[in-house]
Each structure stands twice: as structure tokens, then as C-alpha cells.
Image (tube, rainbow, N blue to C red; front, top):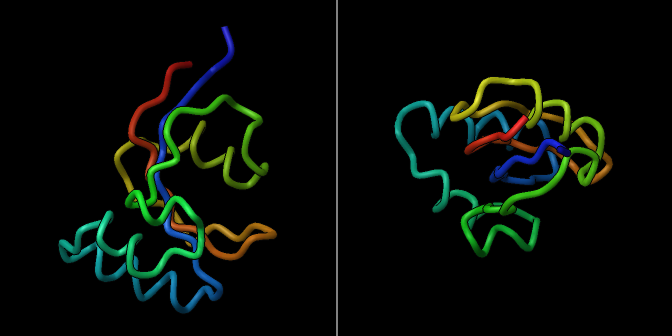
Length: 94
């Protein structure tokens, strides 16, 4: 069976902005609210929720985090061709 995961993210243009948002998350800011306010991805409207997707559906750098790093932890900034992401994997089915 193909591995699947559910994740949410915040996409911004600069590493500095991603770092600033990550600091806010570290002191208890709401991920969904920050995604709605700052994310450049259309998923921002849903609090950054990308739903469930298969391994390989996202760009490699994004996939590496979602399918290899600890879940329920905010990772990043992760640079892709789209910008800088803060990524939180909600669950993963290997």
C-alpha cells in the first residue's frame, strides 16, 4: 500500500518571515490562524490543511519532511520552488 499522510503548512516568501511565524508558534500561537493570515497557498483559507495525500504528490523537499520527520511537530523553514514552508504532519500511514 502506498504511504499516505495528512499535513498542514504555512507558505511564505522569505526565510525570515517563516522564522518569525515559527517563533510565534513556539509560544502558543494558533497554526490555523497564522495560516489564514499569512500563507500564500490557497490551503491557507482552511488553516493550511492539505488533507490526505500520497507519498510523491508534493515536491520532494516537502515530501521528505512529511514522510520522515516526527508528526505533530512544526518543521521548517523548508525551501521549495514555491517559497518557504512551515510544515506540520498530522498523521501518517506508512
